[in-house]
Image (cartoon, rainbow, N blue to C red):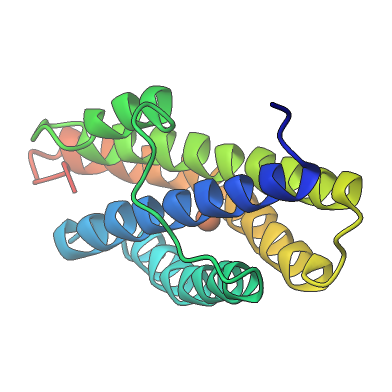
Length: 169
Ligand SMILES: [Fe+2]
């Protein structure tokens, strides 16, 4: 039994939707906890809004095939999931671990959307290409924002820690 290109595309849409649902959980959790890194809070808040739009685009694409999002496939986020769990353990350097993990997660999403677009192209399904390309561009912009925040966040972490202040989040 072979799997049609359309079926591969629908599975990829479901997987990407699951990634976005995971992204929302991760970012909302961080935003609730963040206290001393307002630039990271702003970047996450903005991207949470964007991610709701991305989630809707994927749902619309799935509905066009009479499909609905499914629960996350076991193991699909295994590697990234483990890395994200780093930031769930309270630690003095929680902010640093979350920054690394956010950088990794956004780049994971860039790969996922790039692949999803290629699958859609291979299947000859272009109806959602513009919307998914917009989502990819948003992920690239967020990856860049997180990258640009690595140094200022680290500097603030060092300064707060060295002056005996709370620096973890
Ligand atoms: Fe993202």
